[in-house]
Amino acid sequence: MEVINDLLNYKNLKIIQNSEMFSFSLDSILLSNFVTINKNIDQILDIGCGNAPIPLILSTKTDAHITGVEIQEKVYDMAKRTIALNHLEEQIDIINDDINLRYQQIESDQYDIITCNPPYFKVSPNSHFNLSDYKTIARHEVTLNLQQLLKISRKLLKNGGVLAIVHRPERLIDLIEEMRKNNIEPKKLQFVYPRKDQQCNTILIEGVKNGNPGLKILNPLYVHNETDEYTDEIKVQFSD
Image (cartoon, rainbow, N blue to C red; front, top):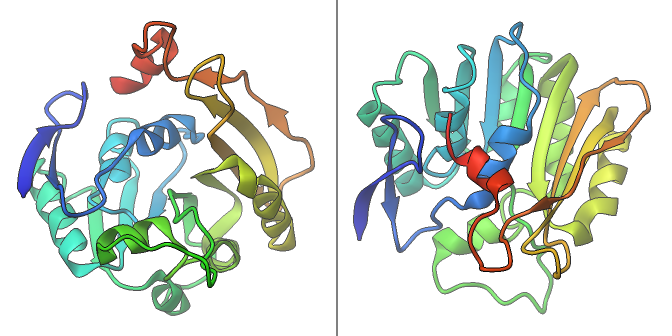
């Protein structure tokens, strides 16, 4: 069923959601607050934008133009209506297309920043897919894998442009290898833990196209405290 929710504590922002599809999660919020944004950026691309949580949050942080690409037509439609609901059509464009095809039609070196909350799981003969095609595409590398994402980013990022990704820790080595193969130097990394007494379950990584070597590892981020409430450092991420 489709509903309209507040986008957490972001002032006056609404988001259209559907329980049958893959709703946005904390990962999108963390990535939006992790990516480096400076005043000189002009163009941002969000790959696999879903119902557009990352473009919405980024619109509170920059005046740059934001493009979201979403392959699933019904999810794209939700994103498009969400942007209209928030009167952000001048700043945010949502495109319904396969980024593997779309990027071939775009000239090189077009974007200052690319963000992506990609499918986390490799596809194998033992993969267990969700009964919902929407959730399968969002979670598994059915339509976009790391090799494709990094190849696309290498072409579309400007020299010195930033790629920011949220992913799972077990894919960290794959990420770093693919980034370096595509001349995107890992520059910033943060580990996210559900609680202090649990293992890391999320990573945030940022690379710079043709950047110099030198990786900065940020302080760990803990989502919940001992009473299972959000920590203060997480609560800060929920507002503009």
